[in-house]
Length: 395
Image (cartoon, rainbow, N blue to C red):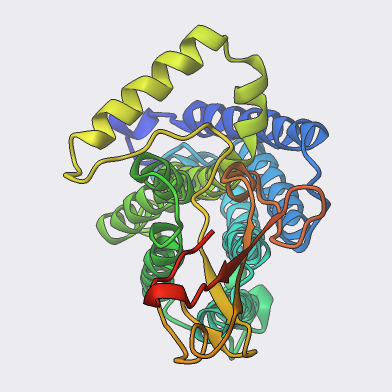
């Protein structure tokens, strides 16, 4: 059988691009993960559930990066399929086996950073009631979606080796191209729900507007992962994964690595604040603080009181107790305080619970000891009445 004449286009090799992406994100995620846990030295934040899922995502992402390099070296990824069929058809079997392993790693790893973010929300915001139910519901949906996709990838062909050996009699496969398309949609839909979950809680915090805006931006850094997820989905819909499968795998595998790596980096960014605070020069911190405060004041019409960096506005309830033993709000009179008494006593007591706003950024739970402040303010006013000449004197 005469060999087919190959064109210059058929001789292209894009494998080095996938190798570069794999090495870059393996190194970048390693550095960011290292900085995240180095930053814990400057805080009292303990090791939590979100850390477990983040480390799992990191390990799986390293596996994806390593597999991306292996696919180039032993499975012909980067070459056009027509070139491989002419020169070394056995590589296509290795490609199918590598792609199956990559699917399982990807569907597992992409769920892990999302679970880490959701468990971070639960630890930081200490939600009760409906918000906690919504967060737990999202955890179940993310975990269930990831598990379902992994199981579908494992059983996409029956028997599974029919995926790379179509000579097996009676073997069947699902429409894998449609499966790839369908799996892309739930990922970024869930991302939007996860990003929007803490926004109302952050905006209701009693702190200056510019600090609330900063917190919103910090907790929306996961939007970087959403961008990568959308680009990956667009690539999957625009590229046929199987017509020129070894060449198309550079884009498809590359964007999958970028997406998962970006999620990991985005999950770590809020925890790097202690390093920024420690190593940023004072003049630069002052400049940034003044710039943000000035910008914030231009968007509000109310008068804003400037607070120190570690302050948060106090809120609480004040109870007034009269000498008759009745609890009232300030300004109320129980009708007996100054009637037929030579002496009346009015007591007010206020309790305020607060913590530094930096605790939210650093991921400290609400009940973390050492940062909570309870302010108790108690005032007692005694009044005396003289009945002579129908005049009342208070002193």
